[in-house]
Image 1 (tube, rainbow, N blue to C red):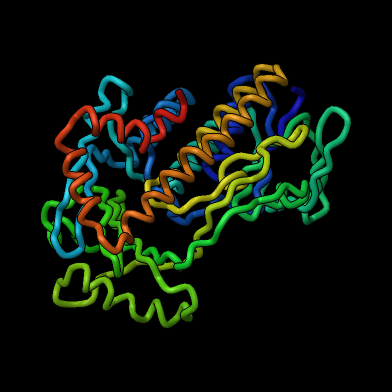
Image 2 (spheres, rainbow, N blue to C red; image 1 turned 90 degrees about the vertical axis):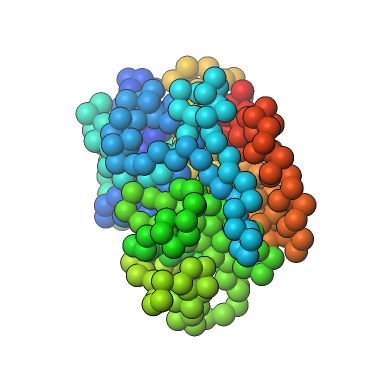
Amino acid sequence: MKRALVAGAGPVGLTAALTLARGGVPVTVLEAGPELAAESRASTFHPPTLEMLDGLGVLPELMARGLIARTFQYRDRRGGPVATLDMAVLADDTPHPYRVQCEQSKLTPILMEHLLRHGGEVVFGAAVREVLPQAGGVLVTTEAGARFTGDRLVAADGAHSAVRRSLGVPFEGITYPERFLVASTEEDLDTLLPGIAPINYVFDPEEWLVLLRTPDHWRVLLPTPEDTPDGAELARLAGRLRAVADPGRDWKVTHASLYRVHQRVAARFRDGPVLLAGDAAHVNNPLGGLGMNSGIHDAVLLAAALLSGDEAAVDEAAGRRRRVALDHVRAISHGNWEKLRSADPAAHHAELRALAADPRAARAHLLRACLITSLR
């Protein structure tokens, strides 16, 4: 390849670009925004993702900014802890038998710095308008009228991918009936909820929730009705948080946002010289932390296939990544949603307690939940 283009300077796009640049390919990343996104967004890194980032030489810097979560917990909203799973059972399967909690906005500057060291470039304010496959490559035109050519294009420009739309690739699936509200708080939840783990999935048929520790704060994810005004939901957030744990005053909330959640997979991950990766190729609910992780896996494996120069290998990689999106990512994340909101969670409680008590069963569960089996 004389030059590769990448649309999107998020963790997926920059991972693909760095993989290609380390393989000796000149890379230009086209980013719609004026700078790298600063929002927290995804914050959980699974073991195989850590292995891939280690292979790209960026893991030590991520580890220095993140925190290690060796356990995660299932809880009942009313009854407290149900089961705690210890990722140490994966010690023979990965050099990283833990999750790392760190906002993706802390990873992207690291990736970009390494990319620039390897001769890659990032062009900001370059929103893709049109993609035209042509003999031997692809022509990309931006909203500002700039034109870029490359032998290959990796589209990692998010769920509303302009590349995918330009190519007319269908993106079918569902939209969840509720919105998700994410609040970041400076409260000490270890004190308010003694015994919680860094990652907690809380069952409740009326209002399930997720509690995640990050280096800077705790994040709380709450389901929210689909058709109420955003302002009304943000106004009642204080009461909802005090119902989770009451410090005798309103929680200290640093940021809160509402968003709709979709479960969709592109009809194909390859369209001639263009490959789709991450949210441009598949989106899912955030329960289980699979979206960014599977997207980084897309980036590394698709870029590696491109570096091989074998078109059959590229086709196989694109097809396999689509199967993973359907059979692993979609199935696991949707299953997590169904269990958390179950009208009768008692059966799930018993299943999880048995799982936590059986190291072999826990290992089998975690191999799948952490996407290790999806790579084998």
